[in-house]
Length: 384
Image (tube, rainbow, N blue to C red):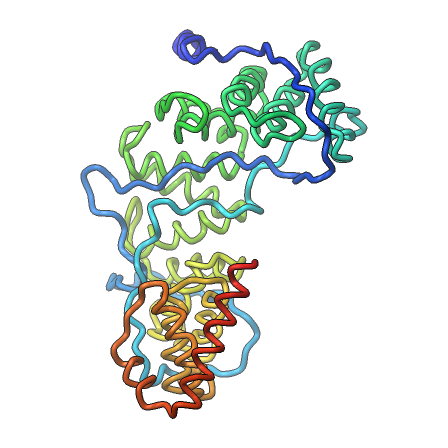
C-alpha cells in the first residue's frame, strides 16, 4: 500500500482486532456481498445526461437489431403519447444479482459453516485463517459484521476487515470498503480514498467496481471529471454483462457523453439492459420502440416492455401502459384496465388529464371495478 493509503487507514482506525459477540447462530443467509453502491451524481460543470428518448442525435452507423422478447407485430406506433421518461435517478443502485460474490475457497471450513448458517463457527474459523494471512477470510469476517450475521451489525468493524482484505489483494474486500468510503457508510466519507479501493478491484476486472469508478469519472467526484475515461470504464462493465452499466452506456451513446452520439448504439445497449430485466431500461426501450429511435418501430413489443416495467412498480411505465390500454396501442383496448393503471400511477404522483377524462367517462360499475383492481394490486405490491 502507498503511504497515503496507510495514513488514511490509520486515521480511520482500520485494524483487525475484533471481539466475538455471543449471539445465537441463525440459518438465514445470502451468497452475495451487498455493500451500498455509490450515488450517481451529475457532473460539476455539465448537465446530467438526458433521457435517451429525448435525444435527437443524427445516426452515425448502420442500425443493429436490439434484443427483445419473441412477440408478434412490427407495425408503426399508433395514437398514443410516449413522452420522454425522466433521466436515471441520482440514487439508482446496481441490481442485486450484479453484486460481487465472496471469493469462496473450495472445501474451506469457514465458508462451509457460513453456507450452513453457522455464523459464529464461520467467524471463529475465519479469524483463525485470517491470522495466517488468508485474504478471503478477512472479507468473510467483514461480511459477517456488515450484515450482522450471528453478531451485532457493526459497519466500522466490517470496514476494518474489508480494508485489510483489500491490502492483502482480495478484490471483493477492495470493492466493499471502497463503496463504504464513497458512501460514508460506517466510516468517515472519503470519496478519493474510496476511488483508490475501487481502482484496486477494477484493475482485477470486477464489473461493479468498474461501473462505480465510471460514475466517479463522469461526475468528477473523487476523480477528475473525465467523460472519455468514464465512457471507457462503463463500456467495459457493460460488456461484462452488468445491466445497470448497459443502461447507462446506452444513455452515454444517446447523449454523446465521452463518445460520439449514436442512437443505434444507444438502442442496442438499452435493449440489452431491458432484456436483462433492468426496470428503467425497459421503460426507455419501450419508448424507443414506439418512436422508432435507433430501431424499427414496434408498438406490440413497446407495450410489452411498458407492462413489464409497470408490474415492477415503475410509475412512469404504469402511466405509459395505461395509455396503451386506453388507445389500443400495441394491445387490445381495455378502458377498465387503463383506468386501473392510471390510478396506480396517479397514487405515485403521475398526473394525466387525458386519462382522468377516460376515467370520468366510465360507468359507475366500471369505475368501481377499476378502483378495486388498483387497490388489490397496490396491496399485493406492499406484500412483495
